[in-house]
Length: 171
Image (cartoon, rainbow, N blue to C red; front, top):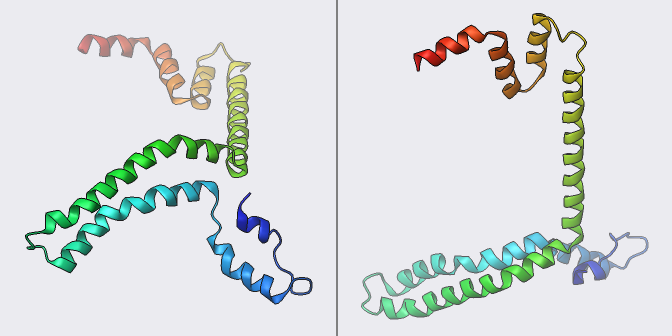
């Protein structure tokens, strides 16, 4: 659990909490980040080094300085070190994020939505397959309007086989 979440577990109630607790809550709570945001800040914050550093060095020492390359070598080496460290830490950070309560709640919600979607699709397929008017051409048109777009083309080609043959001869 986060250090800030341990200290500021409850939202302050002026009747029960001290003024110091209330002010501390207001000051430090914006600095609490969930696990995904923490990893994003750790990896993306350092990625700005080269973009910001080159412009700062160029503006401070001039872009026509003969020692500009020497001044930028530490910046380039530091950027390479950041990339290597991020590469090593990525798997650890991924594991840490996936162990968090926010990630588990998101995954449970996603699985619930997928299950609902599958049950809706099964109900739609069941209503199309159990149509009582399956023998007439009107029922084929009704099936085409209620089924998916892939099924429509199959039903239309079954309903009008002459057009399918004529288009295949043209090709």
